[in-house]
Length: 257
Ligand code: MG
Image (tube, rainbow, N blue to C red; front, side, top):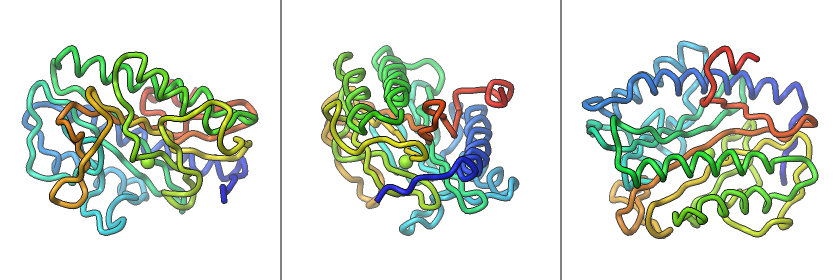
């Protein structure tokens, strides 16, 4: 069952999303060679709690971190730890913020200094596919329109969307219905209606789409060792169109406008 949110509830989710946006900006300023993923995790947790919010991932199904930090061929769910970023790495940071009982979820893959042409393309195309998916998150469309838009953008560039990991509805719970695959057919799936809030999150690789789980039982890697990227927004379907509630791509002035 897809839980629709009232305009007042969407405002509460946007408040969580603003804390999310500021957390991502904070981490963006810290991503550089030599920084450990544990240091990023600690900075995120400190900031989120300073805002009266809670890092949603901490303790979720036993997850030990406040954020997920997934370098290079790791797609998602990396446990922060002693790994120190190296020049040329890519690092996916996934943040969940719970504020006043509402959850905001979003992710972004960063370049650590100059990166390879393949990595640059993977990041640019995946971020673009997220925006293409968001553009389809309109009342009257179907969920498959979102999924298909992401897939079309990614595959047109010779990259792959991971099939076994999906986006999700979000609200009081981090994971609500519906599941949101990053591939599919337009015009299929649940009808999108005003008040639905979706965590749209293309997960992609520069190689093939198969993934494998790491030995810690959390980290998911591309099976072929190819680079992987992850970009995510929490998006509300509103009367005025899609509204990004975790606008980590905007600075403070843009987000307030
Ligand atoms: Mg998510």
